[in-house]
Image (cartoon, rainbow, N blue to C red):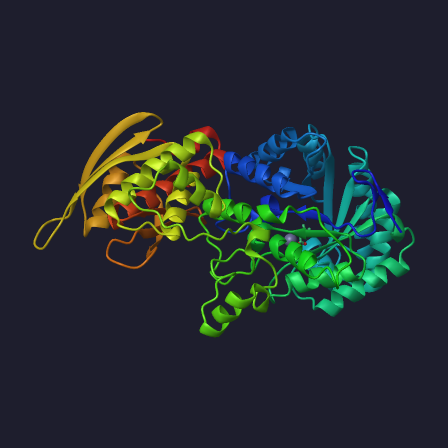
Length: 528
Ligand code: KIV
Ligand code: ZN
């Protein structure tokens, strides 16, 4: 039966609402934090991807979270996604969320409380009846601020049936329009999820008037399977993230759910509003912003997702792609290309290559990337797709950096003391410094600390070759930690030391952005 929903009107029986929580559940996981600028860029890409609901953050968590939810709420018109902010049950949480989403053309408050015996006893230290009362209070308060209210039962998959039914009934009576049952700890099997949703839809009065939602964590690698089982049992909203990022092992990956629904339309009667051709570029944007590549064999968006290596497979593919491909690469944004770039390649070829790799850069970023490509092509005979990807990712993440690397020279060798001189632009002011170290990289980082004094722990330094050959680019990852939190920076260059400096500067910029978001101004890192 079609459901009447405050944000979606009459919801067709076969329509699945895609609720994206990349900017909340995804962003809160270690190493994936984004600054305001990055969140806004992601928000725009998610809207272009066609998601229905955007969970923009957890407004009470920090002033930075509040600001970003508010900025995202301001961004979209009525044609854009519903913007939601997360809140626990307290009035302070709900009012903060209400304030953050207030400017949105379409808004929702998402409130949650734990309902499992373990969580209630250990985490909340509350009796079930008190929790039940909180469900009613929190949803009622949220409804005073918006007609579209989602209620979630944290640790829902480990909640007792009777108590879950009472909570869901209370939430519906108080005015919740979406009921979300998360598998918070990634414990459920697909048959559990099917049973829970079927049970709730059958037993709870008023269940046919609300949207049921599923939110699955991937601890056992079952998040997408559980999501599909919930859809089969009548869930009409799916909570997911780009590249499956999220707490611990992550959430159900949006791209996998969307493509399973599309590819298996014969078995799954529902459809989503996802513009699947935009999937790859959205995935790449997130990877570039967070410095976390997806693994090569990741479904849909991994480098090898459509690569056919074995002779038998290649033979089959040449005869008919259907032999080994269940969906076309183009349907998720990959493009077939045999174009290899070199130093004679022009701007048009470069732009075309970027398009086929899923990137769309603005004019300024394109100019900068093209300049760096020409520079790379002078040093490297053939510029492979991986080189372009490394270079553009570097460019994308650097758009709004306060510290920029402007120069580096290093002298080192047998019997010499490694010495590095570095040039930095810090908030537009040019500075240089020289230092020695135990090796070229150590000297470079010491010079960096001299120009821009700071005290953070270098937790990880890793070098990877982007392609083969001695002229290959090195991709360096640097992890800096402070107060138990860490950020990863990446840099790529044919010169490993330059790549190292780029990576360090990138991490430093991220750390500064993080501190500015979470600390009073006097504590923010200052340039020396
Ligand atoms: O995993 C979870 O339970 C959550 C809720 C806050 C929805 O993320
Ligand atoms: Zn979650």
